[in-house]
View 1 (tube, rainbow, N blue to C red):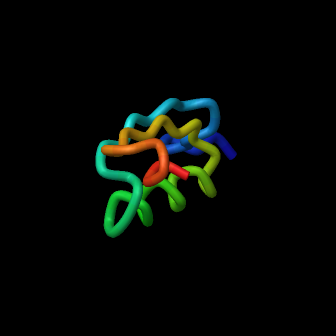
View 2: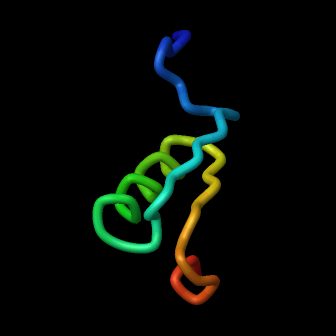
Length: 47
């Protein structure tokens, strides 16, 4: 079945993805097949 809202091979940029809602959003979208780009204030926060 063709999924109209499929995230496979889609790229998503999430700012504030190092914690909180942004972190949960990044994790959830990645589980759905999206490629995630994140932005954090420091490299340490991005890990």
